[in-house]
Image 1 (cartoon, rainbow, N blue to C red):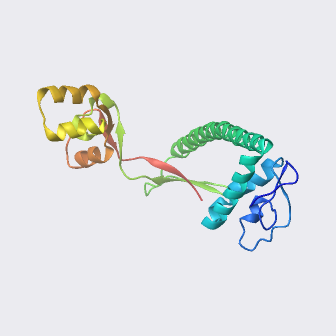
Image 2: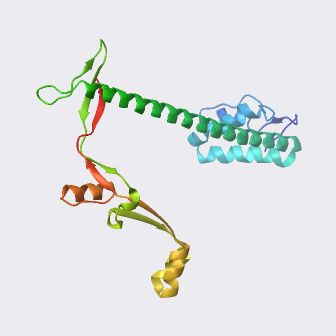
Image 3: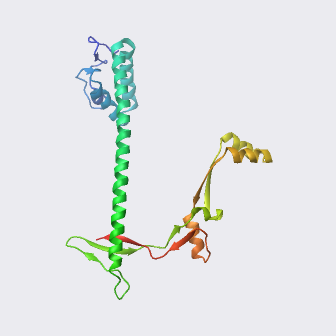
Length: 230
């Protein structure tokens, strides 16, 4: 059973050890675990839980539980640790947002710069074989690579429903009612309560245009090129 001669020390049967080492099968507990050093030891526990066996987790949980039940100060330490974790989550969210914004900025810079280079190469014209000229440097060569035909959407609202895919979300109970019986009142509820989102299917549009059809609000781009760095 866990014992403690110091209210700030958590000692388990068989000796005390930092939680990270206690999780290791080959560990030999020798060092006292101070719950006041909460970031070092409990953070180590969190980081190594994925590699711990069920028996090791149960033993540590029982050890910590005994201390929390019998010592008020250890409850305060655990509270500080959980607050620390909450703060780290908040910091991570802020950092994620910062990195996403940074990625967005650099992605836009890359796209705009590549667009400029494509225009420059196209301004040089094509050779007698119809190939775009290259811009060669000492360590890199810029060239244009022809892209497969792709669909460009001119006006999404004009694209007919046959070329759209709808995603509809309704409650499970309403769906079961619909399956059991379809009537006018239920159809009205379905339309009122369901959440529908439409997405234009470029693959369907491409297949139709290549088959000779005309699709309102869209056209096929057959001469697209992409910058290549070699």
